[in-house]
Length: 562
View (cartoon, helix red, strand yellow):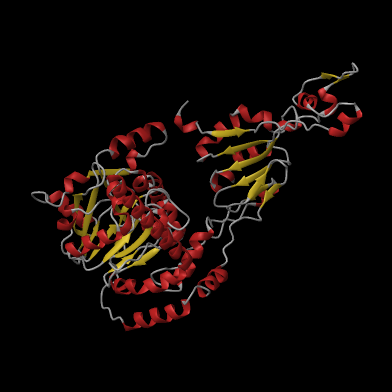
Protein backbone atom coordinates (compact mmCIF):
# COMPACT_ATOMS: atom_id res chain seq x y z
CA UNK A 1 0.00 0.00 0.00
CA UNK A 2 1.10 3.58 -0.52
CA UNK A 3 2.42 5.32 2.60
CA UNK A 4 -0.16 8.08 2.15
CA UNK A 5 -3.09 5.81 3.04
CA UNK A 6 -1.52 3.50 5.64
CA UNK A 7 -1.68 3.92 9.39
CA UNK A 8 -1.25 1.62 12.37
CA UNK A 9 -3.71 0.86 15.15
CA UNK A 10 -3.83 -1.75 17.89
CA UNK A 11 -6.67 -4.13 18.74
CA UNK A 12 -6.00 -5.60 22.17
CA UNK A 13 -7.64 -8.16 24.40
CA UNK A 14 -6.18 -9.66 27.62
CA UNK A 15 -6.58 -13.31 28.48
CA UNK A 16 -10.02 -14.37 29.63
CA UNK A 17 -10.44 -14.71 33.38
CA UNK A 18 -10.83 -18.37 34.43
CA UNK A 19 -14.01 -19.38 36.25
CA UNK A 20 -13.99 -19.59 40.03
CA UNK A 21 -14.42 -22.88 41.91
CA UNK A 22 -17.70 -22.79 43.84
CA UNK A 23 -16.78 -24.55 47.10
CA UNK A 24 -20.35 -24.62 48.39
CA UNK A 25 -21.39 -26.59 45.28
CA UNK A 26 -18.47 -28.99 45.80
CA UNK A 27 -19.59 -29.65 49.39
CA UNK A 28 -23.16 -30.27 48.27
CA UNK A 29 -21.93 -32.79 45.69
CA UNK A 30 -19.73 -34.58 48.21
CA UNK A 31 -16.31 -33.64 46.88
CA UNK A 32 -13.79 -34.15 49.70
CA UNK A 33 -11.01 -31.61 50.40
CA UNK A 34 -7.80 -32.39 48.53
CA UNK A 35 -6.43 -32.77 44.97
CA UNK A 36 -9.85 -33.48 43.44
CA UNK A 37 -10.77 -29.84 43.97
CA UNK A 38 -7.72 -28.82 41.92
CA UNK A 39 -8.72 -31.11 39.07
CA UNK A 40 -12.22 -29.63 38.98
CA UNK A 41 -10.80 -26.11 38.98
CA UNK A 42 -8.55 -27.03 36.05
CA UNK A 43 -11.55 -28.14 34.00
CA UNK A 44 -11.42 -31.88 34.55
CA UNK A 45 -14.45 -34.00 35.46
CA UNK A 46 -13.93 -36.38 38.42
CA UNK A 47 -15.43 -39.63 39.73
CA UNK A 48 -16.03 -39.85 43.47
CA UNK A 49 -15.36 -43.07 45.46
CA UNK A 50 -19.12 -43.76 45.48
CA UNK A 51 -19.16 -43.70 41.67
CA UNK A 52 -20.84 -40.32 41.27
CA UNK A 53 -19.42 -38.17 38.45
CA UNK A 54 -18.92 -34.47 39.17
CA UNK A 55 -18.50 -32.28 36.13
CA UNK A 56 -16.19 -29.29 36.29
CA UNK A 57 -18.83 -27.16 34.58
CA UNK A 58 -21.24 -27.85 37.49
CA UNK A 59 -18.96 -26.44 40.18
CA UNK A 60 -16.87 -23.82 38.32
CA UNK A 61 -18.38 -20.50 37.29
CA UNK A 62 -18.25 -19.63 33.58
CA UNK A 63 -15.06 -18.11 32.15
CA UNK A 64 -15.19 -14.31 32.09
CA UNK A 65 -14.40 -13.02 28.57
CA UNK A 66 -11.69 -10.38 28.44
CA UNK A 67 -12.70 -6.88 27.38
CA UNK A 68 -11.50 -5.54 24.05
CA UNK A 69 -9.89 -2.13 23.70
CA UNK A 70 -8.50 -0.28 20.70
CA UNK A 71 -5.70 2.25 20.34
CA UNK A 72 -5.79 4.39 17.21
CA UNK A 73 -3.78 7.33 15.88
CA UNK A 74 -4.78 8.82 12.56
CA UNK A 75 -2.15 11.51 11.91
CA UNK A 76 -4.01 13.49 9.25
CA UNK A 77 -7.14 13.64 7.13
CA UNK A 78 -5.28 11.78 4.36
CA UNK A 79 -5.73 8.51 6.27
CA UNK A 80 -9.47 8.69 6.92
CA UNK A 81 -10.54 6.61 3.92
CA UNK A 82 -8.20 3.88 5.10
CA UNK A 83 -9.74 4.10 8.59
CA UNK A 84 -13.28 3.66 7.27
CA UNK A 85 -12.27 0.79 4.98
CA UNK A 86 -10.43 -1.21 7.67
CA UNK A 87 -12.53 -4.36 8.18
CA UNK A 88 -10.62 -5.44 11.31
CA UNK A 89 -12.72 -3.07 13.42
CA UNK A 90 -16.10 -4.46 12.34
CA UNK A 91 -16.14 -7.38 14.79
CA UNK A 92 -15.79 -4.90 17.67
CA UNK A 93 -18.37 -2.33 16.58
CA UNK A 94 -22.18 -2.46 16.45
CA UNK A 95 -21.76 -5.31 13.97
CA UNK A 96 -20.12 -7.54 16.60
CA UNK A 97 -21.61 -11.06 16.72
CA UNK A 98 -21.29 -11.35 20.52
CA UNK A 99 -21.62 -8.73 23.28
CA UNK A 100 -18.20 -9.57 24.72
CA UNK A 101 -16.54 -8.70 21.38
CA UNK A 102 -17.70 -5.07 21.49
CA UNK A 103 -14.84 -2.67 22.25
CA UNK A 104 -15.04 -1.45 25.86
CA UNK A 105 -12.81 1.52 25.14
CA UNK A 106 -11.10 3.25 22.21
CA UNK A 107 -8.01 5.35 22.94
CA UNK A 108 -7.61 8.19 20.44
CA UNK A 109 -4.21 9.77 19.84
CA UNK A 110 -5.53 11.39 16.67
CA UNK A 111 -5.22 15.21 16.68
CA UNK A 112 -8.37 17.30 17.29
CA UNK A 113 -8.70 18.48 13.69
CA UNK A 114 -8.87 14.83 12.60
CA UNK A 115 -11.29 13.76 15.35
CA UNK A 116 -13.64 16.62 14.41
CA UNK A 117 -13.69 15.58 10.75
CA UNK A 118 -17.07 14.18 9.55
CA UNK A 119 -15.46 10.93 8.34
CA UNK A 120 -13.79 10.32 11.70
CA UNK A 121 -17.07 11.05 13.48
CA UNK A 122 -18.75 8.56 11.16
CA UNK A 123 -16.22 5.93 12.25
CA UNK A 124 -16.88 6.66 15.95
CA UNK A 125 -20.64 6.27 15.34
CA UNK A 126 -20.02 2.69 14.27
CA UNK A 127 -19.36 1.79 17.90
CA UNK A 128 -22.26 1.28 20.33
CA UNK A 129 -23.04 3.83 23.04
CA UNK A 130 -21.42 1.54 25.65
CA UNK A 131 -17.96 2.09 24.13
CA UNK A 132 -16.00 4.84 25.90
CA UNK A 133 -13.74 6.97 23.71
CA UNK A 134 -10.69 8.43 25.46
CA UNK A 135 -9.13 11.50 23.79
CA UNK A 136 -5.40 11.72 24.53
CA UNK A 137 -4.65 14.88 22.61
CA UNK A 138 -5.19 18.64 22.93
CA UNK A 139 -8.70 18.01 24.25
CA UNK A 140 -7.08 16.79 27.46
CA UNK A 141 -5.18 18.80 30.13
CA UNK A 142 -1.44 19.17 29.49
CA UNK A 143 -0.12 18.77 33.06
CA UNK A 144 2.15 15.75 32.93
CA UNK A 145 3.96 15.68 36.26
CA UNK A 146 3.44 16.99 39.78
CA UNK A 147 7.19 16.81 40.46
CA UNK A 148 8.25 19.42 37.90
CA UNK A 149 5.59 21.90 39.03
CA UNK A 150 6.42 21.34 42.71
CA UNK A 151 10.12 21.96 42.03
CA UNK A 152 9.50 25.02 39.87
CA UNK A 153 7.12 26.67 42.34
CA UNK A 154 9.68 26.28 45.12
CA UNK A 155 12.57 27.54 42.96
CA UNK A 156 10.37 30.42 41.82
CA UNK A 157 10.43 31.71 45.40
CA UNK A 158 14.21 32.17 45.13
CA UNK A 159 14.18 34.18 41.91
CA UNK A 160 11.11 34.58 39.74
CA UNK A 161 13.12 35.67 36.70
CA UNK A 162 15.60 32.79 36.72
CA UNK A 163 12.90 30.24 37.61
CA UNK A 164 9.66 31.38 35.91
CA UNK A 165 6.52 29.36 36.52
CA UNK A 166 5.66 26.86 33.82
CA UNK A 167 2.88 27.47 31.36
CA UNK A 168 -0.27 25.37 31.66
CA UNK A 169 -2.27 25.22 28.47
CA UNK A 170 -6.06 25.33 28.63
CA UNK A 171 -7.30 22.24 26.76
CA UNK A 172 -9.40 22.70 23.68
CA UNK A 173 -13.13 22.57 24.17
CA UNK A 174 -14.54 19.22 23.17
CA UNK A 175 -17.07 19.63 20.33
CA UNK A 176 -20.64 18.80 21.32
CA UNK A 177 -20.94 16.10 18.67
CA UNK A 178 -17.97 14.22 20.16
CA UNK A 179 -19.21 14.66 23.71
CA UNK A 180 -22.56 13.14 22.72
CA UNK A 181 -20.68 10.14 21.28
CA UNK A 182 -19.13 9.37 24.70
CA UNK A 183 -15.73 10.94 23.91
CA UNK A 184 -13.96 12.00 27.11
CA UNK A 185 -10.81 14.04 27.76
CA UNK A 186 -8.35 12.25 30.04
CA UNK A 187 -6.02 13.68 32.70
CA UNK A 188 -2.49 12.39 33.15
CA UNK A 189 -2.37 9.35 35.49
CA UNK A 190 -6.12 8.78 35.27
CA UNK A 191 -7.02 5.09 34.93
CA UNK A 192 -9.53 3.18 32.89
CA UNK A 193 -10.49 -0.03 34.71
CA UNK A 194 -11.28 -2.79 32.27
CA UNK A 195 -11.51 -5.57 34.84
CA UNK A 196 -13.28 -5.18 37.13
CA UNK A 197 -15.25 -2.90 34.84
CA UNK A 198 -15.16 0.43 36.67
CA UNK A 199 -14.54 2.68 33.69
CA UNK A 200 -12.62 5.96 33.91
CA UNK A 201 -11.18 6.83 37.34
CA UNK A 202 -9.49 10.19 37.93
CA UNK A 203 -8.75 10.01 41.66
CA UNK A 204 -4.99 9.68 41.06
CA UNK A 205 -4.81 12.11 38.13
CA UNK A 206 -2.21 14.89 38.15
CA UNK A 207 -3.41 17.88 40.14
CA UNK A 208 -1.27 21.00 40.45
CA UNK A 209 -1.44 22.59 43.94
CA UNK A 210 0.79 25.72 44.01
CA UNK A 211 -0.18 26.75 47.56
CA UNK A 212 0.88 23.35 48.90
CA UNK A 213 4.26 23.55 47.17
CA UNK A 214 4.94 27.02 48.57
CA UNK A 215 3.93 25.83 52.03
CA UNK A 216 6.35 22.89 51.72
CA UNK A 217 9.18 25.30 50.91
CA UNK A 218 8.51 27.47 53.96
CA UNK A 219 8.41 24.35 56.13
CA UNK A 220 11.95 23.44 55.05
CA UNK A 221 14.60 23.92 57.76
CA UNK A 222 15.80 27.53 58.04
CA UNK A 223 14.19 28.44 54.71
CA UNK A 224 12.88 31.87 55.67
CA UNK A 225 16.28 32.82 57.06
CA UNK A 226 18.09 31.57 53.93
CA UNK A 227 15.58 33.29 51.66
CA UNK A 228 16.05 36.59 53.50
CA UNK A 229 19.83 36.28 53.15
CA UNK A 230 19.48 35.50 49.46
CA UNK A 231 17.26 38.51 48.75
CA UNK A 232 19.67 40.80 50.63
CA UNK A 233 22.63 39.41 48.70
CA UNK A 234 20.89 39.90 45.37
CA UNK A 235 19.98 43.49 46.23
CA UNK A 236 23.64 44.19 46.90
CA UNK A 237 24.63 43.05 43.41
CA UNK A 238 24.98 45.63 40.68
CA UNK A 239 25.07 44.54 37.06
CA UNK A 240 25.02 46.51 33.86
CA UNK A 241 25.41 43.47 31.65
CA UNK A 242 23.12 42.80 28.71
CA UNK A 243 19.99 40.64 28.62
CA UNK A 244 21.28 38.55 25.71
CA UNK A 245 22.34 35.91 25.07
CA UNK A 246 19.67 34.20 27.13
CA UNK A 247 20.26 30.56 28.10
CA UNK A 248 17.27 28.30 28.85
CA UNK A 249 18.00 24.84 30.24
CA UNK A 250 15.46 22.34 28.91
CA UNK A 251 17.20 19.17 30.08
CA UNK A 252 19.97 18.81 32.67
CA UNK A 253 20.07 15.06 33.39
CA UNK A 254 22.37 12.38 32.07
CA UNK A 255 21.34 9.12 30.41
CA UNK A 256 17.63 8.95 31.21
CA UNK A 257 14.84 11.40 32.03
CA UNK A 258 13.56 11.65 35.59
CA UNK A 259 10.74 13.39 37.42
CA UNK A 260 12.63 16.67 37.93
CA UNK A 261 15.22 16.57 35.14
CA UNK A 262 14.90 15.70 31.47
CA UNK A 263 17.80 14.65 29.24
CA UNK A 264 20.18 17.10 27.59
CA UNK A 265 19.00 20.20 25.76
CA UNK A 266 19.91 23.88 26.09
CA UNK A 267 18.32 26.74 24.17
CA UNK A 268 20.53 29.77 23.60
CA UNK A 269 18.53 32.80 22.52
CA UNK A 270 21.38 34.65 20.83
CA UNK A 271 19.15 37.63 20.09
CA UNK A 272 15.45 38.34 20.44
CA UNK A 273 14.67 36.69 17.08
CA UNK A 274 17.51 34.18 16.71
CA UNK A 275 18.15 30.98 18.73
CA UNK A 276 20.53 28.04 18.79
CA UNK A 277 19.78 24.64 20.35
CA UNK A 278 22.61 22.71 22.00
CA UNK A 279 21.66 19.02 21.94
CA UNK A 280 18.14 17.74 21.59
CA UNK A 281 17.31 14.89 23.93
CA UNK A 282 13.99 13.09 23.87
CA UNK A 283 11.11 15.34 24.88
CA UNK A 284 12.83 18.63 24.03
CA UNK A 285 9.83 19.89 22.04
CA UNK A 286 7.55 19.22 25.02
CA UNK A 287 9.97 21.00 27.35
CA UNK A 288 9.81 24.06 25.11
CA UNK A 289 6.01 24.03 25.26
CA UNK A 290 5.99 23.74 29.06
CA UNK A 291 8.40 26.65 29.37
CA UNK A 292 7.02 29.03 26.76
CA UNK A 293 3.46 27.86 26.11
CA UNK A 294 2.24 26.76 22.68
CA UNK A 295 2.06 30.15 20.96
CA UNK A 296 5.46 31.46 22.01
CA UNK A 297 7.03 28.03 21.45
CA UNK A 298 5.96 28.27 17.81
CA UNK A 299 7.73 31.61 17.48
CA UNK A 300 10.86 30.22 19.13
CA UNK A 301 10.89 27.26 16.71
CA UNK A 302 10.47 29.61 13.75
CA UNK A 303 13.44 31.70 14.96
CA UNK A 304 15.64 28.64 15.55
CA UNK A 305 18.78 29.04 13.43
CA UNK A 306 20.50 25.73 14.07
CA UNK A 307 20.73 22.62 16.23
CA UNK A 308 24.11 21.37 17.46
CA UNK A 309 24.24 17.67 18.35
CA UNK A 310 27.34 16.89 20.37
CA UNK A 311 27.30 13.13 19.77
CA UNK A 312 24.85 10.40 18.89
CA UNK A 313 24.08 8.94 22.29
CA UNK A 314 20.30 8.72 22.64
CA UNK A 315 19.99 11.19 25.52
CA UNK A 316 21.44 13.93 23.29
CA UNK A 317 19.61 13.49 20.00
CA UNK A 318 16.40 11.44 20.21
CA UNK A 319 14.21 14.55 20.31
CA UNK A 320 15.48 15.91 16.99
CA UNK A 321 12.89 14.55 14.58
CA UNK A 322 9.93 15.59 16.71
CA UNK A 323 11.45 19.06 17.01
CA UNK A 324 11.89 19.27 13.24
CA UNK A 325 8.26 18.27 12.67
CA UNK A 326 7.02 20.79 15.24
CA UNK A 327 9.10 23.51 13.59
CA UNK A 328 7.66 22.75 10.15
CA UNK A 329 4.13 22.83 11.55
CA UNK A 330 4.84 26.13 13.35
CA UNK A 331 6.07 27.76 10.15
CA UNK A 332 2.92 26.61 8.37
CA UNK A 333 0.61 27.89 11.12
CA UNK A 334 2.34 31.29 11.22
CA UNK A 335 2.44 31.43 7.38
CA UNK A 336 6.21 31.90 7.33
CA UNK A 337 8.51 30.69 4.54
CA UNK A 338 9.96 27.26 5.13
CA UNK A 339 13.55 26.19 4.75
CA UNK A 340 15.44 23.22 6.21
CA UNK A 341 16.92 23.74 9.66
CA UNK A 342 20.70 23.55 9.91
CA UNK A 343 21.86 20.62 12.05
CA UNK A 344 25.55 20.44 13.00
CA UNK A 345 26.37 16.89 14.06
CA UNK A 346 28.80 13.97 13.68
CA UNK A 347 28.61 12.33 10.28
CA UNK A 348 26.72 9.28 11.59
CA UNK A 349 23.56 11.39 11.77
CA UNK A 350 22.99 11.20 8.02
CA UNK A 351 22.77 7.38 7.62
CA UNK A 352 20.74 7.11 10.81
CA UNK A 353 18.27 9.75 9.61
CA UNK A 354 18.10 7.96 6.25
CA UNK A 355 17.15 4.67 7.88
CA UNK A 356 14.51 6.37 10.01
CA UNK A 357 13.20 8.18 6.92
CA UNK A 358 12.85 4.89 5.02
CA UNK A 359 11.33 2.87 7.87
CA UNK A 360 8.96 5.33 9.57
CA UNK A 361 8.31 8.78 8.15
CA UNK A 362 9.99 11.36 5.89
CA UNK A 363 12.35 13.57 7.92
CA UNK A 364 15.55 13.93 5.89
CA UNK A 365 14.16 16.89 3.94
CA UNK A 366 13.49 18.79 7.18
CA UNK A 367 17.14 19.60 7.92
CA UNK A 368 20.35 20.69 6.22
CA UNK A 369 23.37 18.78 7.51
CA UNK A 370 26.75 20.28 8.46
CA UNK A 371 29.54 17.92 9.56
CA UNK A 372 30.93 18.89 12.98
CA UNK A 373 34.41 18.04 11.70
CA UNK A 374 34.22 20.91 9.19
CA UNK A 375 34.06 23.52 11.97
CA UNK A 376 36.95 22.44 14.22
CA UNK A 377 38.36 25.30 16.30
CA UNK A 378 41.93 24.76 15.05
CA UNK A 379 41.05 24.58 11.34
CA UNK A 380 43.45 26.40 9.03
CA UNK A 381 40.97 29.04 7.92
CA UNK A 382 37.34 30.06 8.06
CA UNK A 383 35.75 29.97 4.61
CA UNK A 384 33.60 32.74 3.19
CA UNK A 385 30.70 30.29 3.15
CA UNK A 386 31.14 29.63 6.88
CA UNK A 387 31.32 33.36 7.61
CA UNK A 388 28.05 33.83 5.73
CA UNK A 389 26.47 31.04 7.79
CA UNK A 390 27.62 32.65 11.04
CA UNK A 391 26.02 35.92 10.01
CA UNK A 392 22.80 34.11 9.14
CA UNK A 393 22.82 32.52 12.59
CA UNK A 394 23.44 35.93 14.26
CA UNK A 395 26.90 34.77 15.35
CA UNK A 396 30.43 36.07 14.93
CA UNK A 397 31.91 32.58 15.18
CA UNK A 398 31.03 28.95 15.83
CA UNK A 399 33.69 26.29 16.33
CA UNK A 400 33.61 22.66 17.37
CA UNK A 401 36.18 20.73 19.40
CA UNK A 402 36.71 16.99 19.78
CA UNK A 403 36.25 15.99 23.43
CA UNK A 404 37.03 12.87 25.47
CA UNK A 405 33.88 10.79 25.54
CA UNK A 406 32.85 8.44 22.75
CA UNK A 407 34.07 8.41 19.17
CA UNK A 408 33.08 11.58 17.32
CA UNK A 409 31.97 13.49 20.43
CA UNK A 410 32.24 17.27 20.16
CA UNK A 411 32.00 20.37 22.29
CA UNK A 412 31.23 23.76 20.77
CA UNK A 413 32.01 27.45 21.22
CA UNK A 414 29.62 30.22 20.14
CA UNK A 415 30.51 33.90 19.90
CA UNK A 416 27.69 36.39 19.46
CA UNK A 417 27.88 39.43 17.23
CA UNK A 418 28.50 41.51 20.39
CA UNK A 419 31.48 39.29 21.29
CA UNK A 420 29.94 37.26 24.13
CA UNK A 421 31.44 33.74 24.09
CA UNK A 422 29.71 30.56 25.29
CA UNK A 423 31.46 27.17 25.45
CA UNK A 424 29.49 23.95 25.82
CA UNK A 425 31.42 20.83 26.78
CA UNK A 426 28.71 18.24 26.09
CA UNK A 427 29.79 14.84 27.53
CA UNK A 428 33.48 14.62 28.29
CA UNK A 429 36.25 13.93 30.73
CA UNK A 430 38.44 16.93 31.51
CA UNK A 431 39.76 17.85 28.08
CA UNK A 432 42.76 20.08 27.26
CA UNK A 433 41.50 20.76 23.74
CA UNK A 434 38.25 22.13 25.19
CA UNK A 435 40.25 24.36 27.53
CA UNK A 436 42.17 25.80 24.59
CA UNK A 437 39.13 26.21 22.34
CA UNK A 438 37.18 27.92 25.12
CA UNK A 439 39.82 30.45 26.13
CA UNK A 440 38.21 33.79 26.88
CA UNK A 441 34.71 32.35 27.39
CA UNK A 442 32.21 34.46 29.25
CA UNK A 443 30.25 31.30 30.11
CA UNK A 444 31.30 27.67 30.23
CA UNK A 445 28.48 25.11 30.38
CA UNK A 446 30.18 21.90 31.46
CA UNK A 447 28.88 18.45 32.30
CA UNK A 448 29.25 17.31 35.91
CA UNK A 449 27.78 13.82 35.88
CA UNK A 450 29.38 12.57 39.11
CA UNK A 451 30.21 13.90 42.55
CA UNK A 452 33.87 14.35 43.46
CA UNK A 453 34.10 11.11 45.46
CA UNK A 454 33.14 9.11 42.36
CA UNK A 455 36.06 10.28 40.23
CA UNK A 456 37.09 6.70 39.39
CA UNK A 457 33.59 5.85 38.16
CA UNK A 458 33.45 9.09 36.19
CA UNK A 459 36.73 8.20 34.47
CA UNK A 460 35.47 4.73 33.55
CA UNK A 461 32.37 6.25 31.96
CA UNK A 462 34.38 9.15 30.41
CA UNK A 463 32.49 11.82 32.34
CA UNK A 464 33.51 14.61 34.72
CA UNK A 465 32.97 15.29 38.40
CA UNK A 466 31.80 18.66 39.75
CA UNK A 467 35.31 19.63 40.86
CA UNK A 468 36.84 18.60 37.54
CA UNK A 469 34.29 20.68 35.63
CA UNK A 470 34.95 23.74 37.78
CA UNK A 471 38.71 23.23 37.34
CA UNK A 472 38.24 23.20 33.54
CA UNK A 473 36.54 26.58 33.86
CA UNK A 474 39.46 27.93 35.90
CA UNK A 475 42.07 26.68 33.43
CA UNK A 476 40.03 28.05 30.53
CA UNK A 477 39.73 31.42 32.19
CA UNK A 478 35.94 31.33 31.86
CA UNK A 479 34.24 34.16 33.69
CA UNK A 480 31.48 31.82 34.89
CA UNK A 481 30.93 28.05 34.92
CA UNK A 482 27.48 26.44 34.92
CA UNK A 483 27.27 22.72 35.65
CA UNK A 484 24.75 20.41 33.98
CA UNK A 485 24.21 16.77 32.86
CA UNK A 486 23.82 15.40 36.40
CA UNK A 487 23.37 11.73 37.17
CA UNK A 488 19.83 10.94 38.30
CA UNK A 489 21.24 10.17 41.75
CA UNK A 490 21.37 13.97 42.05
CA UNK A 491 17.88 14.50 40.69
CA UNK A 492 17.18 17.55 42.84
CA UNK A 493 20.57 19.03 43.69
CA UNK A 494 24.19 17.90 43.20
CA UNK A 495 26.46 17.64 46.20
CA UNK A 496 28.03 21.06 46.73
CA UNK A 497 31.70 20.78 47.68
CA UNK A 498 34.22 23.40 48.71
CA UNK A 499 35.21 23.72 45.05
CA UNK A 500 32.05 25.75 44.41
CA UNK A 501 32.90 29.43 44.46
CA UNK A 502 31.63 32.82 43.38
CA UNK A 503 31.83 32.06 39.67
CA UNK A 504 30.16 28.64 39.56
CA UNK A 505 26.55 27.50 39.62
CA UNK A 506 24.41 24.49 38.82
CA UNK A 507 21.64 24.29 36.25
CA UNK A 508 18.06 23.14 36.66
CA UNK A 509 15.42 22.28 34.09
CA UNK A 510 13.38 25.39 33.14
CA UNK A 511 16.12 27.72 34.39
CA UNK A 512 16.63 30.90 32.37
CA UNK A 513 19.78 32.97 32.76
CA UNK A 514 21.38 35.86 30.93
CA UNK A 515 24.69 37.67 31.63
CA UNK A 516 23.23 39.91 34.32
CA UNK A 517 21.90 36.86 36.26
CA UNK A 518 25.17 34.94 36.56
CA UNK A 519 26.60 36.74 39.64
CA UNK A 520 23.48 35.83 41.63
CA UNK A 521 23.66 32.07 40.99
CA UNK A 522 26.28 31.20 43.67
CA UNK A 523 24.08 32.99 46.22
CA UNK A 524 21.36 30.40 45.65
CA UNK A 525 23.21 27.47 47.21
CA UNK A 526 22.25 27.93 50.91
CA UNK A 527 18.56 28.32 50.02
CA UNK A 528 18.74 25.36 47.62
CA UNK A 529 20.21 23.16 50.35
CA UNK A 530 17.32 24.22 52.59
CA UNK A 531 14.58 23.47 50.04
CA UNK A 532 16.07 20.09 49.19
CA UNK A 533 17.35 19.34 52.71
CA UNK A 534 15.97 15.81 52.95
CA UNK A 535 17.34 14.83 49.53
CA UNK A 536 20.70 16.48 50.25
CA UNK A 537 21.15 14.73 53.59
CA UNK A 538 20.29 11.41 51.98
CA UNK A 539 22.98 11.96 49.33
CA UNK A 540 25.54 12.84 52.00
CA UNK A 541 24.72 9.64 53.89
CA UNK A 542 25.09 7.57 50.72
CA UNK A 543 28.43 9.19 49.97
CA UNK A 544 29.68 8.54 53.50
CA UNK A 545 28.62 4.89 53.20
CA UNK A 546 30.50 4.52 49.89
CA UNK A 547 33.62 6.03 51.41
CA UNK A 548 33.43 3.63 54.37
CA UNK A 549 33.02 0.66 52.02
CA UNK A 550 35.94 1.88 49.93
CA UNK A 551 38.13 2.25 53.03
CA UNK A 552 37.17 -1.24 54.22
CA UNK A 553 38.02 -2.68 50.80
CA UNK A 554 41.44 -1.01 50.85
CA UNK A 555 42.14 -2.30 54.36
CA UNK A 556 41.14 -5.83 53.36
CA UNK A 557 43.49 -5.68 50.37
CA UNK A 558 46.32 -4.58 52.65
CA UNK A 559 45.62 -7.42 55.06
CA UNK A 560 45.65 -9.97 52.21
CA UNK A 561 48.89 -8.46 50.92
CA UNK A 562 50.52 -9.08 54.32
